Amino acid sequence: MVRTLEVNRNRSEGGLREEALATELADYLVEKGIPFRTAHRAVGKAVRQALELGVGLRSLPLEEYRAAHPAFGEDVYRVLDFRQAVERRDSPGGTAAARVREQIEKAKELLRKEEEDGEVS
Image (cartoon, rainbow, N blue to C red; front, side, top):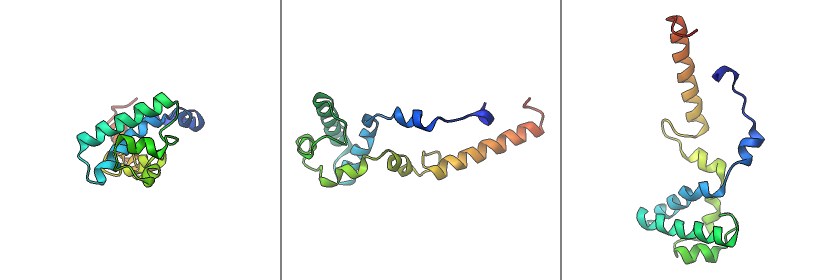
């Protein structure tokens, strides 16, 4: 199955929802010294407000972010980037491209060993 996997990039990127970036917003606040529980609550308020207004998180006005928590600054929009969010997870097993390549290589090596041992048909 892995050998024949084809990814439809347009379709997969088209399914991205800005609410998936909520973790980035919480991390943003935590990096500013806000306790995680407080950050989580503030992000929940911001997400609810975006849904009520019918806008995505990248279109939510700054004053709405600040109503959720005053630590939100003009730089909040820089964290609302899907590619950046993926690349930030750069620890073993993370989603950063380098980490995914590592996991692919490990999987290939396991398959090679299993084929050599006759465990894969």
